[in-house]
Length: 547
Image 1 (cartoon, rainbow, N blue to C red):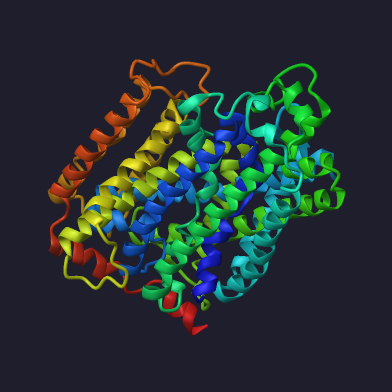
Image 2: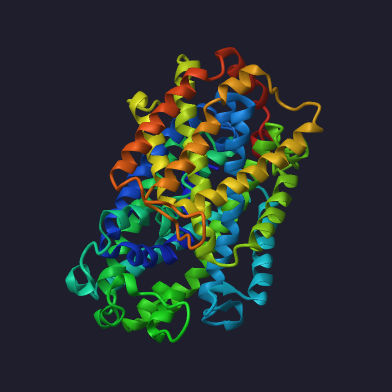
């Protein structure tokens, strides 16, 4: 695919179900100050995008986010970040399907239970069909996929812009102030918590999709960094405009009866205002209907199928490439690296479908999966600044088609910012991630035991990952003692012993210790280059381009 296709591969992931629900949940969490949270999220992901732009252009390999830490720190550290990358990728397509079910209930009520906020049995079956369609389209190859995705992407951009232009005409200035409970009813804590816990960080996920498909992009050294940066800039602008329109267009009477933005939600039991119920089930379509734009409400409900469809489609693509990448690393069975004549990693594609089905079972709603995906994603993203710092030291003379200015400052800063989002996700998310990580280690360890060609686990590899357990356990302890619970109602719960402000300073200091520790124990240059040479020369690119 060319430059536009690469931009759309990332943008299609950024503009997905996040725009359908993000404005509502962000306003629930932070009121009108959600605008600040969107800006904070955009800045953080811009830093992470800059990091990915350099290393993605240096090593344009399929499933790059699963492989960069492997190149820099070897097998032990690479196992963890490869699994984080795979976990993030495989869970997004199901959550996009859930978004379709939640909006589509307007026409087909049997798909979704508004009382339990979960999909029904019928909705579960339809979700499986959607995943099967995503998988089937991917078997036609990257060129066919790029054309399909580009067509969908123009629609996905046009509808949010149309919603903004129409709804912003219903301007209610009071919605930004005292009539809605104040501009920032929850203060700084709620603004920061909204970045991770209200779907904002989730909405930005996917900028790295061009990285995952780097082996199949024309002239990746030029097009890859430009595509990533362009996708983040477009996404940030659209999300901020949408949040302005959502706040401005809301009927002030509804806000008054719900006692402001933070009350704009249905109670767990008892009666719910029908208008509020409609808003929580399909925020933008309901808002358009309340404002008298029934034609726009219809279009938005159609878009609630098209937008998640496009995102789910491209995530099945990237998941197969990440699965290919962990297969190349020999963390998963090498059969995942098999490709067909079009360059499609078909075994990895089937695994993406089956894995998506597994994650449908314990998380039967959009919101229940979002925070977990956010935590896994940012753990994955945190590996990129570490890899960049290591590459600058291991191969300072390497060809860098895009060279990030001030990388010695930007890389550790990006690592700190990634850890902020992990912390803001809350203890509930972090301890669940911890359990999943342990399960992942068991699964990968089981595969590697029987693999005679498994990657080395020598003393250099263990040394290069010596910081990793301290990092993971340390983040858990800080979260336990910190301010964000992530919605926890049962033990373990956070203690709030570390005050607001001090928690960010501690996270920043801890991150710098881990960062420079990782730099000190990185793989030697020769071993790093050997890993790159072994894995970087036979990606699906050749077969895909030949087709």
